[in-house]
Image 1: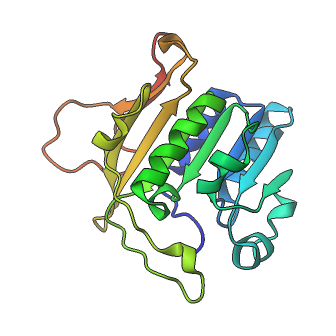
Image 2 (image 1 turned 45 degrees about the horizontal axis):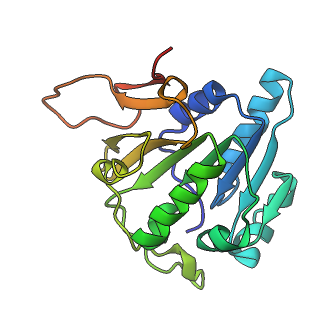
Image 3 (image 1 turned 90 degrees about the vertical axis):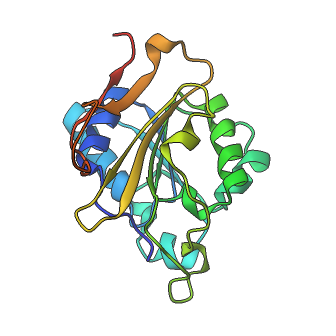
Length: 213
C-alpha cells in the first residue's frame, strides 16, 4: 500500500531539524508524510523550505494524495532514472522513507552515489523483513532488495542502526553524507548502548548529531 509506517518519525523530525535544510527532495513520498513534517518545521522556524518530491505513479499516488498541495515541485519519474535524466538536481537533504527496497540493489546503490554528489545528507528508513508484493494494481509496491546496516558501510560517510517494531518487523535508519562534506559536517546516527540483552525497538537508544561538534 502506498505510504510509510510510523517508524522513526520522532527521530527523523529531529534529524531534519538538525540538518536545517533549505531545499529537500523526498523520494517516494507516499501520502506526503515527510512533506507534512517539513511544513510543520517551516511553521516552527518561520522560514520556507523548498519541498520537492519524486514519485513514479501519478494516478495512484500523486493525484490520489493531492501531493501538489504538499510539495512545491513534483518530479513524476522513476527514482532510478534521476541519475541520467536530472544531472543538475541539487539541494541540502534527501529523504528516502520506505523506498530504496523497491529498487534493485544495484539501482539503489547507484542512486545513493548520484545523490551523494548533489546533496549534503541523505536520510533513509528501510524495512528489512517487511514483505510487500504488488498492491491491487499498484505494481511499484513490491519489495525486491534487502538492505542491512552493513550494506550502508560501502558508502563513504554512511552511518546506520537497526531496530524492530513490537511485532518483529526490522527497520534500518541510516544517514549517508555528501561526498564533499568533511567528517566534522557529517550527521551521524548510531546505537546509544553497546550491549543489550534484548532486541532494541524503534526510536530506543538511538543517538544522532554531528560527528565532531
